[in-house]
Image 1 (cartoon, rainbow, N blue to C red):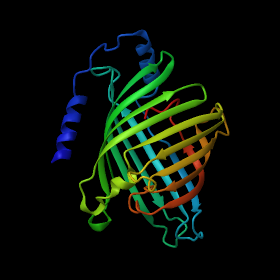
Image 2 (tube, rainbow, N blue to C red; image 1 turned 45 degrees about the horizontal axis):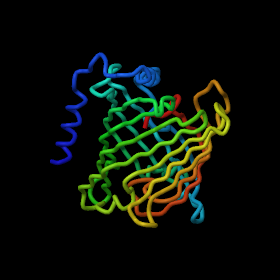
Image 3 (tube, helix red, strand yellow; image 1 turned 120 degrees about the horizontal axis):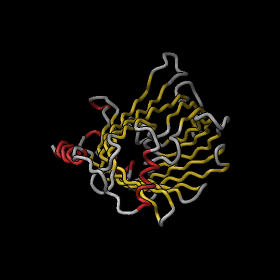
Image 4 (cartoon, rainbow, N blue to C red; image 1 turned 90 degrees about the horizontal axis):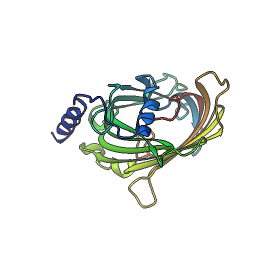
Length: 274
């Protein structure tokens, strides 16, 4: 019931009539223009297709896999809501495919829909930044003892500090109401930090995402990747990704993994919003 009330009030906020102007300074208008240059329907998180092997155990047909993600967002209005926030709908789906096993089953699919409001602004007058509030759900769509689900309210800040550096901080209030994964919070923690560095702008870049679990030392995760764009005018990259830690997938969130994967990735144009 509590979750339903949260969704109701958040949806009510997004349904307010958009106002013609909410920005007080010229720099706010320029920040909004940077957001509006992007298509209303666009890439949300990285869209990728990767294959790889574990580094912490012997490789077999059962533990080598394919991981892919489809992620997009829809800006609901060209005009901001109260306070200069733009409303968005978001959806991401991450799948783990045991393509090398004899029957080639999907071992896990995670679904992540959400709604958000995003405020563009310039930090210290010249660093393009985005602040966002979101209400999100993540689950694996299963039932019984295989069900994994949680909801969370999140706040994030993303800022382009220079031509080469983009950094982000994200914190969330987890809402876990299922008995079978009541300890999930211990592994997903309460926030994450991210950074992107342009090794060679327009051609080479590196990403890192660090998530801290609630334990003092244990839990959490680290994902790093190096991206190479073979053709400047194309929008895809060849990516080498390393993930180590917990909660790469929901079904085995308690299992520590170390996976090295190689594949293709499509990234948002410019700086990602979230």
